[in-house]
Amino acid sequence: MPRPRRPSNAGREPAPLRYPPVGVLADAYARVLEIALQLPGVEDTRAYGTPCIKVRGKVMARLRTEAEGGLALRCDLLERHMLLQADPRAFYLTPHYQDWPMVLVNLMEVRWDAMPGLVEAAWRLVAPPRLVREYDAGHGTQ
Image (cartoon, rainbow, N blue to C red; front, side, top):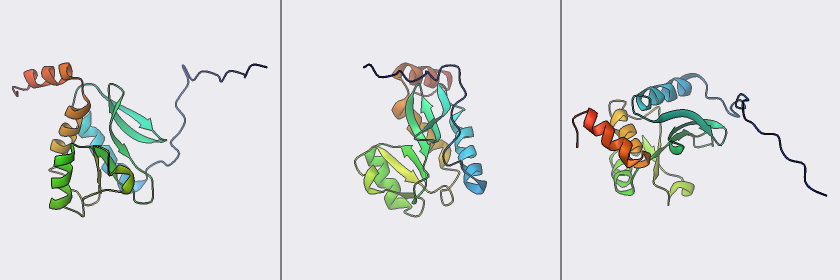
């Protein structure tokens, strides 16, 4: 007997977050999102039931709700190593992220003047090359 098909989610509102961010954490995530939305192709979406920032469907950052919390942010491994050494209160890893090109950011400890550069670097790692070239051409960067 054939399995019944699951109904499509097309045209429906997305399911509510399993762990909605509250208070200060929500405000901090909103600041990260505001920075990210200045970059082309950025989407405010969800992954694993939590707020997520994507570029053309690729994860750039995600708010974690696991016990150790934090914002998982795309980051090349060399930059991650430097961040972990420079400010271990703001940047950390869990065993799960050891082999992934991401760093965990403590949004209560990070220097906010550094966030635009970190967010842009994450965007550059996931954005399509053509989008990066167009952005750079429009901002006089190379």
